[in-house]
Image 1 (cartoon, rainbow, N blue to C red):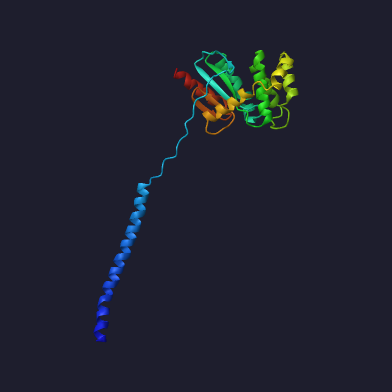
Image 2: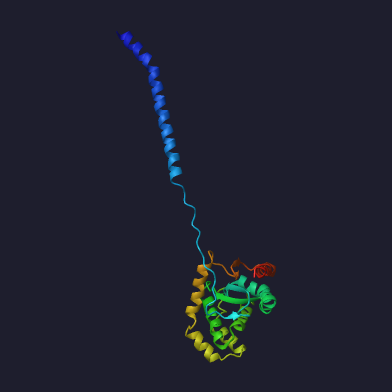
Length: 234
């Protein structure tokens, strides 16, 4: 009786192993299949691309013919060394070859994000507009800043702003009244907010030639090519 029971057990053993193997294989197939099904059902969403608007001329001081076919927007900070480089090496050539010839007009946007001196300088330049000297003041500020090419060294201060106003034959009392009252504080802040709405990465200088954005103080040839291309589309 014991031998028979043993024989039955030995006889059934291979089938037990086979059944166990089938169950294990089935579990693996189910597990793998479930994982693959989940991956297929739960596809990763494509990263959302932020939508940005285009720079606009609001109450900005336009340099050049208002009806010029090309608009060049410059987002700049008076403390920014690369902005000074762009001003010295490239902006003057763009003005001469495109703005003065009526092919383009230029608009400066105050992206004053490097600190209090940047904000103060931007507000001072805005005050100069009240006496029709905005672009002359803009130029004088950059010429002063690029002398030392340093940020946060305290040179962009009230005394310097007053001196520039005096050198430009402005009414210094009216200028200082405007500056001290922070008349254009909101205007400068508005330009900063606009910068955030038109570019993904805040950087100075950022230049728009119509809709084309170029970030950096590249050589003049880069900008002249972009302007020429824009002109051919007109």
